[in-house]
Length: 459
Figure 1: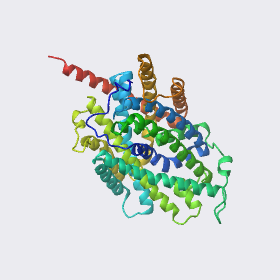
Figure 2: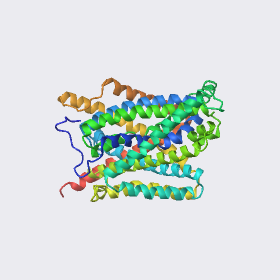
Figure 3: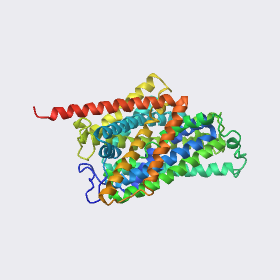
Figure 4: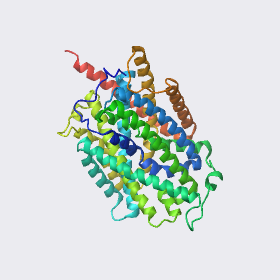
């Protein structure tokens, strides 16, 4: 981390026309998607109402991570974000590893968002098969991401506005239902929460925790988008503060309403928002919220495709990915980076055609714990870079309060999550798979760096 006067500026080739309001809504757009509209039901099925504990734990961690990222992004706005910060703090291999890990995570999430949106739309309009809908979504949003960042940011802004308004309306209806204010509808009260709060015990909370972590994953895209934002030193801090409290209110509020209205055995948890509105007996509301959920997932797909393309572009700029991925179009868009980032989504639609209804659950399980590695690396990087900046007397445009205590608290909390995860059989395999993936990526990045260095040496 460097001072404001000597900070590395955003990549000169990319555009810098994204507005602060667009940056804020992009953070919401990437985080409010499949994890909330679909994953919340899966979390309740795993842990019952005790899933609220999972949301509070993960929410606390993401707040600390985003504060740390905000400090680094304001000082050095770059499309590589935490990958670049890890490189400066821990070395090239660490930076490349976390960059590729996050990119792999996002390309899987992109496929999950497309399939999730297609499945929801099919539930209310079964005219086109899920795989064909998902394929259509992938084509449309690939085209959108090939436009200039200003147009992309405006599109994402209005997408996010729509789903935020829908969630606010959902919370209002849920509160009215629980308080018995809806005519001719009996209130379930809090019986579903108080009767059996944690039916699966600590193991259920641990299982749900990784579903919840998947839900919060993507919030860190704010740090990536800072590189193409006007006045990032000031807009990043505002965006992070706004995104965090909104996400926590929307997530915890929505999950509380769902857990109170729908029992763990309810079939409505397959599409929990629609299930609650059906219980409220509001004509057409279930279908309407399902369509809003489709928009929400597509908004998240849009934002995550942006983040994935910028990350692999940054890796190419730093020589950690093939150089051709850093080529830009006339609109300052890394077209080839967009193409490789969306390729897996197209492949997933083929898999959905071959194995119907089996791909989305597998994708949810694949990416949950990779978020933890990325977040942990961000905290360690901030701890090192902030201390380095303090020793050098560097001026930082945004300073994380409570340093180093809160950063260390985040790392301790992360360690506890890993310990809980390894103690539960349902999540142990996922964590081991993630560690194997990280080890393979690190080995590949180290070997690639050695070969590149050797090739550059004079003969």
